[in-house]
Image 1 (cartoon, helix red, strand yellow):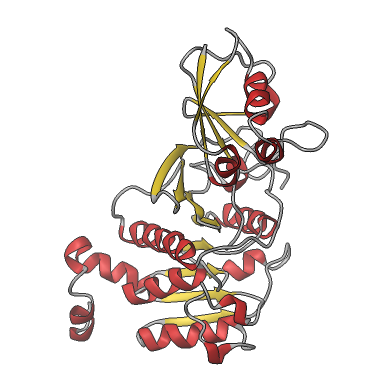
Image 2 (cartoon, rainbow over the protein chains, first blue to last red):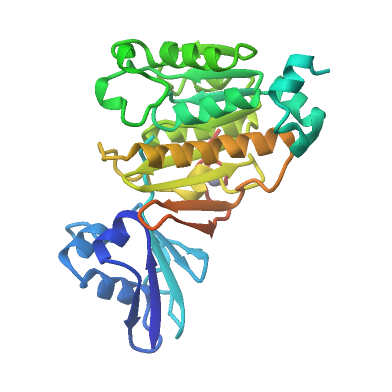
Length: 92
Length: 244
Ligand SMILES: [Zn+2]
């Protein structure tokens, strides 16, 4: 099935733009994030810590609704879902 | 009642919210926390709009490297406290304004005192540790908070209405790392002015506040996106996770 991935700010720069990602039916969000991380070393570093954990401050939205990081292994995606990835900025 | 001079000064905006709206601006007290990249444009446009009192809070002095974006500070201000430099320019823009300044850093003890009796707070600081302090203080006092932040060509804005909408901690439960990121001055200008616009709307009761919505600005593509954000039941600052 196909999942659309939108991204913002530094994560967008690292990934290179919006993506359409193919994952197996019913795949969890964690699986999709792993595929996105494999796009490039920059994408991997933007999303994941060195120990492979998703960076704690990355905000995840599924079809416009917030997903908690603790739910990414349990949340099964559906064909056509849109996932948004957003790193908050902090400067002022 | 507006004076004749005030009627003339604000003639081009009074049709938008009436003399009553202009009077509300003139009575409003706004705390602008941070007199840097966001605080400078936000405070300048609030002064020009006829806000009654601006309370500026910032612990820093002007450095030359600030000048690409902190537009109230000029070459000759390097070394001066930012609040003094900013207050001078704001009063030159609008002598009808009252400016009070606090050359101080926000901490756990003074946060509620520093935002004081403001009607609304502009978050124009540059790290999340300080933002969480402001968030908690604004929630405790029931004062709306207009959050802004920038990095590079990117920015974000949201308005928190205490107890009614997602607070900063609901939206950002984990702080992004503090880093000295590059920023183009125009990005801070865009975001700071969206914050000023939020304040003007709130005070005059115009339009829809950015409540429960996070606006993302992408200057590279000149586009904005609105993400809806919800209160989190277990939020450490406004939910069951809060220990007061
Ligand atoms: Zn909250």
